[in-house]
Length: 126
Image 1 (cartoon, rainbow, N blue to C red):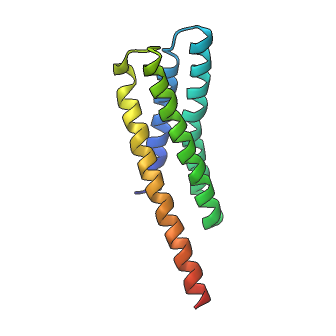
Image 2: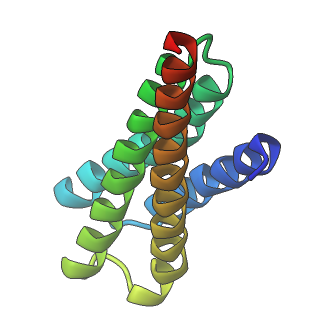
Image 3: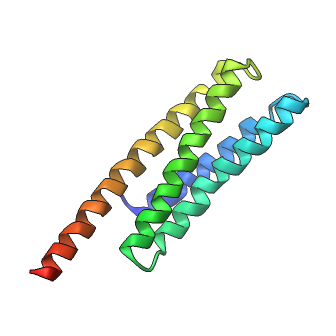
C-alpha cells in the first residue's frame, strides 16, 4: 500500500477520533477518555509519518510498532466508550472498524519489513 494513501487515511482517522472524543459527556470519566482517545488517535497518524521518513529499516520497524500500539489503544478506548455507554454504539462502530483495519495493515507491514530486513542481512552475509 502506498505511504501517501496511508498518511491520508491515518490523518482522517485522527480527525475522526477527535470528532468522536468531543462528543463524550463532560464528566470526570468522559474527560479522561476524551484525552486518551485524542492522544492515541492522533499519535497513529503522527507516528506513521515518522515511520515513513525513518532512516533505517530498524527505525521504520520500531516506529511501525508504535503505530500498532497506538492503533490498538484507540481500539481499546473506542470499545470502552461503548462498554461504559458513554456514546451510542452507532457513533463508534465505523471508527472502531477503521482502527481494526489499520491495525491489521500495520501488523502486516511490520511482518513484511521484518522479513525483508532479515533477507537483506542474509544477502549481505552471503
